[in-house]
Image (cartoon, rainbow, N blue to C red):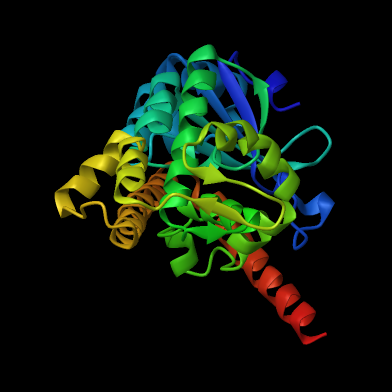
Length: 309
């Protein structure tokens, strides 16, 4: 597979349409999205560029591993992506490379909510690093608490799943430019109920003030419970919330937190887009953007057709 062609990595996971159920994307069309975490990204890129030179744009190879990783951290959201690739079976894939420390930092602090957001949703781990596994447990708890802050006193399991998926999509610049389908959040939540339930059932069981049933979930929305959920959020979010002095009013907290997350996601997706433009070959960039627009448009057309029936 993909990992066999790359230098050794500490942690690897697959995410996106190849893992998530999505009725708008046919099986053979599902590109594989992979994220790998490594200890020394600069050295790793040097080794990988020697092994797989075609994965990198010529100007990226010219700058070397240090420049590639430097662009990812100073311009992007800490991840360098090699995209528009094909494996030995002809399947399309792309992979992102991140420093293990940056992955842990994003999972624990939501600095960019980039890796953390992808790991809010079902994904498949191909290789595991203890530091990332432990940080992901905290990331999942943070996602559950954040989702609850955006929900009313009574809600459904689907509402909970939808709120989690929305955390890392609200503010995504790709939606603003129609490079992502606006119905994606709803489709992911509805099509992946069982996987989401399995991913979050232990987290939900440990949450204070939450009662679950087959039809209706209920949560404690008292000021005390709201404050506890705020305190359970990652440091980046709690710091931003404390600046706006929302107090313990549940509705104000929910609105303010959504605004904070939109700000984080907007910045990180914009940074990642800019870094991708500067480190990827123009041909691949245009092909990737075109494919995203086509996929989003096709999905919208499919949804419109289904609605008309």
